[in-house]
Structure formats: C-alpha cells, structure tokens
Figure (tube, rainbow, N blue to C red):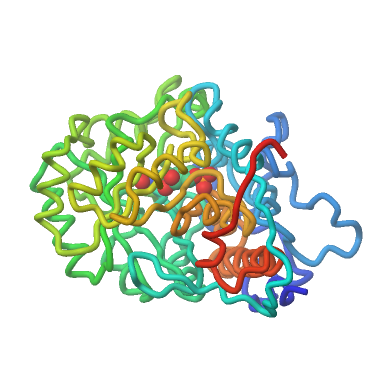
Length: 422
Ligand SMILES: Cc1cc2nc3c(=O)[nH]c(=O)nc-3n(C[C@H](O)[C@H](O)[C@H](O)COP(=O)(O)O)c2cc1C
C-alpha cells in the first residue's frame, strides 16, 4: 500500500488537501488575482482525463482529494478563464500529436518481474549525474502567473520540496533571479533570441543566479499554429509579462486581436528561427553548465547533439504544441536511445501523466522524464500546496509501479522489457 496521498499537504494551506478541495481563486486575463471564482466554459468538450467541474469521477460522497494527476485537470479547468485553460491545454493544428502522445504511452506494456524480493523500492535516481528524489523534472512552461498569482516561485518551491529540478522558462513571468532564490535545483531553459546579446545576457544571468543546468529548446523556430489561441484571439493579461526579457517587445504579447494569437506574434518577433548546429556548438563553448537539448525526435539529430557535447537530449514534441503530425515521443524514444548509446542521457517529455508513465519511459531506455501540464493544473488548483500534492502523488505512484514490477529502484526499471499492442 502506498503512503497516504496528499498526507504532506495541510488542508488549511490552500484549496487542495484532504477533504478540502475547494475551487480556488481564478487567475488570468478574465479575472485579476483574488477575484471571485468564475465558472469555466461548459460548452467545450472535456480534455482526456479531465472533468468539466470541480468534482472528480468516482469521487462519490467521500471525496478526499485528487487520486491521479489527471484529476487536477478538472480543478484547473474550473478555476481558469476559458482562454487560459485553452492556452495551457491546447496543442497545434488538429491536436493529432497531442492525442498521439497519450495513445503511444498507453500502448507501452511493461512486463513485471516477479519473485525479486523487493520490499520498498527507492525512487531516487540521478539526472545529469546529480542525485534527485525521483527521475523527474518540472518541464519549462511559460507565464505561470497566468494560472496562479504565485506563479513560478510557487511551482519552484514545490519542486524543491519534492527534491526534483525545476526548469525555468525564458518566458517566465518571474525573473530568473527570483526563481533561483527559492532554492532547490533550478535549470534554465533557453529560447534562442534574434538578439544574441540578449542570449548571452540570459546565459550570464542564469549562471550567476546559480542555475545548475541549461536546457536549450530547439523545436520552436516559430510557434506552432495553436488554433484555440488563434480562435480566442489570445493575449497576455497586463499583470503577466515576459519578466526575463526587458525591452523584448513584450507589448506584442498583450495586444489582443480577433483571430490572432498575440503570443505567437510576440515569439515571432523575438525568437530566432534559424538556429543551427553552429549555434549549439557556440552555446556548448559559452556555458560551463551541463547542457540539455530539448525537442529532439530524429535519432540523427540526437546523435549529432551528443557529438556536439550535449549532456542530455530531451525527446519532446513540446506536448503536441509544435509540429502537428510529429510522432508521439514514446514512439520516437527507443531509436533515440539506440542512437546516442552511452554518450548522453535521454529524457522523455510530452504526455507523462503518472508514475506508470515514468516506469514506461525508463523501461524504454530513458534516464528520466519531464512533466508539463499536470503541474500547471495543480498550480492552478492549489498554488504551491497543489503542486506539492501532485509531485507527492507522482512519487507514490512511481514507488507503486516499481514495487509491482519487482524493481528496487529506477535503475532496475531500465532493464524491464516492454511490448506494444496491449
Ligand atoms: C502552457 C505551456 C507553456 C510552455 N512553455 C514552454 C517554454 O516556455 N519553453 C519550453 O521549452 N517548453 C514549453 N512548453 C512545453 C513543455 O516544456 C513540455 O514540453 C510539454 O508541456 C510536455 O508535455 P505535457 O504537457 O504533455 O507534459 C510549454 C507547455 C505548456 C503546456
């Protein structure tokens, strides 16, 4: 039996906790922080694993809190203005890749080992050679003050409490210095900007702030066509800014125009589309920090990133937000693992929704995973306490998954066999 879920979350600390899962204060463009709760749009179809109101399927009368990471989706949806929910939840185009990420993970069946004599597995595992409480990092996600007024520092504090790295986005709504001051292990995610002086400045600031690693995202030459944002004419509310990029055309992200995503216009103005291997080599030479390359799907690119000195590649399709029609990451992962061999670590990103998915990734050869949307859902639902609850749940699920496969630790899970097709 796993440890009691959410046992580390005082019920009075937030809307999330045992028996106290109230609809939290909403955030975002339609309602300033602290405004009364508004109903989420009820005319849109529910996302996979989510519910359209603050209750959770199967909760019955004795509901004591989220039983899975997916349960946080319904809470977040109820708390957020519809266009903010869409910004977080949506993918690009027809959302084929977004859907495929889950389907591919669900197709990975892991063969349990039995009679291994394992009692209580350890979840600890290194990432980039540094010890972590579990082989999980919080994926870089822009503008976290959109979903909760406490934003990035709250999620970073939850990551610190869980003993896992927090990856701070270039497009954070809090300055990197303030995020790093929270403590714990913070990695900085770099988007390549047209202005190389700004890139160099960000690198220096991240290093000076004490970031432990640099993650460069290479799958965003332009923003994918996220149709929900286009249809919503999505723009950032005034209180949410790209805090790391003073003078970086922030105004463009705030100019709402029907039929236009202001976020896409903004990134189009500041991101450099023509990032190349020469730039990656420059970056490798420019920073002493361990370097992760996020957004790899082709094994040839993975091999070249390793040759260029990457310490890890992140197999990612950006959670289905970039090329619609790109393969699911669980499908792409095994060839990438084979291509890099022992030259660098491989992390899986996109679609991870629980401890069994971490196990699946390990069994397919990954060193660890990034988790994205579920932690934004939890942040939206309950601030820092909500995110702590989600990460505690993930650790408990991983421990259960290791127990059920006879693994003493995550390293043992990398020797498990998988099969596909159910
Ligand atoms: C709201 C949102 C904002 C994101 N912002 C960034 C970002 O600033 N930088 C980045 O590299 N990836 C960003 N991503 C992608 C995530 O890092 C990650 O690849 C993706 O969320 C993983 O898929 P998942 O949400 O299914 O776990 C963002 C994703 C979401 C949902």
